[in-house]
Length: 110
Image (cartoon, rainbow, N blue to C red; front, top):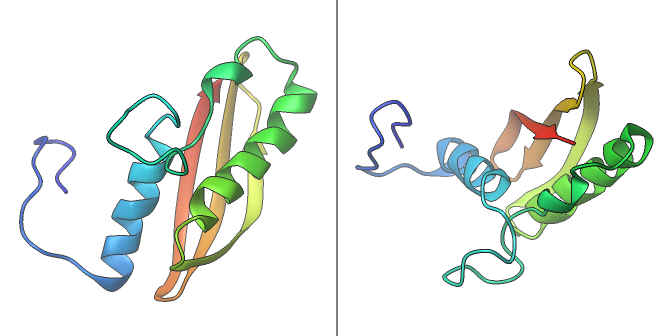
């Protein structure tokens, strides 16, 4: 997956495939696209306007739920929230897969 060139080609597997899977899951809004199962993706749209004290634990729960639906992902840990920008939550975390660990992040406006 080449994000700068908006292209997808070739073949990848194991850890590189997991990086792509994590990226796709976290960048697909759940229940919006009929081509995806209702189990695929993450819900973030309803977080807008909610208090940060609710958004952070809810975002952690939703990220974990979205990613562990993939049976190659064992767990998601080490959540670190950055609240330095008003109205924005930036979260970094580690995704533990059967192929190794993936560092990931997600930014949500609330």
